[in-house]
Image (tube, rainbow, N blue to C red; front, side):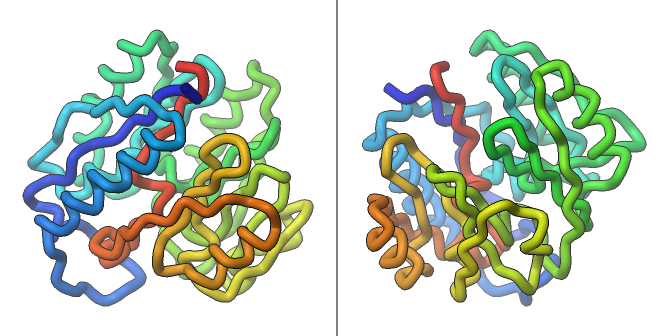
Amino acid sequence: MNGTGLVRQPSSRLAEGIVTHISRTSVDVALARSQHEAYADALAASGWMIRQAPAADDCPDSVFIEDTVVVCEDLAVLTRPGAPVRRAEVDGVAQTVRSLGLRTARIEEPGVLDGGDVLQAGHTVYVGRGGRTNGEGIRQLRSLLASLGRTVTGVPLGSVLHLKSAVTALPDGTFLLLPELVPAELFPAVRPVAEESGCHVVPLGGDRVLIAASAPRTAGLLEDLGFTPVVVDISEFEKLEGCVTCLSVLLPGR
């Protein structure tokens, strides 16, 4: 096994989730639940043991578990989401990561930070400064991760919800990126993509890379580069600005 994959069941109120940079469209909650199950199955088939965080049915966005915690080695940094209505999502996840033996720390007021703004690549941690994460949140994370030998680099964001809505890292150390949404020059080795959902990937171990079905050209590019794309349909979550990164938190070796 590669480790544990934390996920959380979609709320019955999922269709009420926040939309910021796109127009609201109708969400099929039953289909979303089916897609979420298939997503978890894809993680399991790639060697991850699935662990469900306690459901948070009163929180429409709670399925986007990545925003509630940033895990670095044995430290789980519990976030303070930039959208106040999402802060109730954190406590259930805190309970779960502690049960897995992780130390915890918290982002405190006036800091705000969403886990979707945090991209770890080796010993560098890129943090998006946008609508959901502020400078104080970045400062606190920098302080918390310094003892683990991590360098935290702030990244100004354009009209995009989170940093990982615009850039993610491949296992070979290169970055898939949408240049119009994030400064490409801050990243050492960039592969620009044309499909917006093509810049959202999750390395699953070995050459396997999770990617959304809405990015077929990028999946083809990954295959040409010697990776094995693991394709999942997350169309209902994409209607709420969700992507493959935000539906799980992977804990290697746990």
